[in-house]
Image (cartoon, rainbow, N blue to C red; front, side):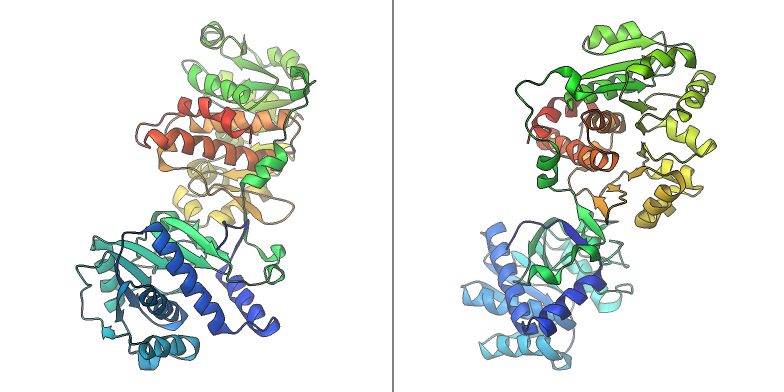
Length: 492
């Protein structure tokens, strides 16, 4: 067993890793299957220690083989195990057939699926269909999925929940809702994309002793933003450091009647470690913001020319929080579109960019799916259905770094696979969260990180702060709750 690795692969790539381990490194396929079953039993018993009556539901192929191994090994450890078969075990081939035979040889009994599960089972093991699923779940398999989802027992999925596409994470007709997914050999993209996070529960990983050289990072579909990446980019500060060492962020936004967003963004930049933070906002807001957060240097600007002295002192611009669509906002957009400073654009800055597209390599854009749709001339639903392709199109059309927000936020990369954030929670779907993220990313650029690292680290910092804030409950979480948590996360 191991912690989740950085690299996330397509199903085809994981299949090739399996093949390489078996054919080039001499690890028998049944040895890998046995290790998978042992890992699943160990994780299930650790996670659900009170479960003593397990029901394993087996389908076809190697996922069923994993299920038969789980049944055999759990029974050896004193667990009461029953097995239901969705297909005649005599139709199994290869390692799956061997796994079934070994279970029977040790006294195991397999019953044919007859439309219902053991009502007394306190743990159900999903060994129905694996990560190679390419068509909708239907017929008796769909009925079995429905029975699993309506049962009171906890559910452990082997490799990936039945019905979740291994690459996209989309539900293929029907899907098992697992409390724990025990995945093997390589992380599959579908665990983290689309509907995957809603169906996988907690994700545990076992490499099954496959040598690292079987998993070339160059073949990864994504890279997970892990704690090591944060530690490398957020080292302890020198004892002799001063505020001038940590950059100056200029936040531009806060149109008439919208001071909150620019205030959130500015304080997030401070909490993420920026040395100095200035705000350029509508004149009616400047004194109000200073009164609530005196550490922010707030300036009322009426015209784009008044930005010039502020830009001359800044290292990075955060543009868009609370900006609006007024003539005032349009004038500021025209000035900042010609600016060469590193910048983070969000909110209405993205809507102005969609109106007047322009590439900029020193700019980070942070759209949610609706904003991404406007930038690409498509619907939000189309963006969500093809998040990977949408990320690539944003990067190609607008340059710089693209951050596609949402569950499993993606960050584009020019140096390898895109980054994927596995932290965060649904409580963060509230107003102002994007303004906080913009401030965090801008602060990291001010402290010397390049755009890609600032975006990736900033996304992870923001998500982890959200998870800390949600420890008191996800429902009712507000963006300002993250501000107090940011210090903990940016000091790993």
